[in-house]
Length: 102
Image (cartoon, rainbow, N blue to C red; front, side):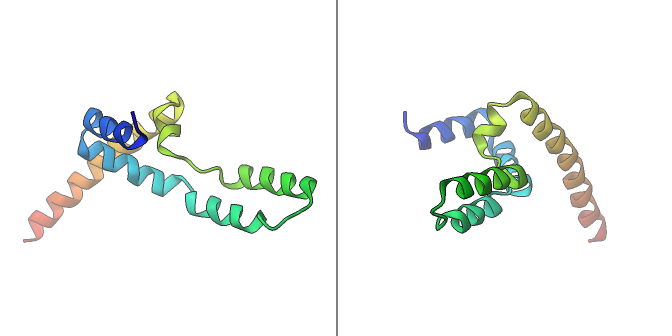
């Protein structure tokens, strides 16, 4: 099975709303952009020891969260579930406020 098929299977299991929320959670807490920028910054380092130190430092500062990290890690999944429930309530409140304003 390809990775794309795995993601589609996960989408079907979670449902579209929860899958989209998972994507939003990762964008919010994942620090992926910082991680990629940090990797680009250390690519030119030729000294292995210096590179390792910078990589460890980067890992401590902004280890990214990917979809697998949430799905496969029980503690991270629990954090997502809590965030999802809190976000769901906020979204419902915002929608009802917009309806009342009309």
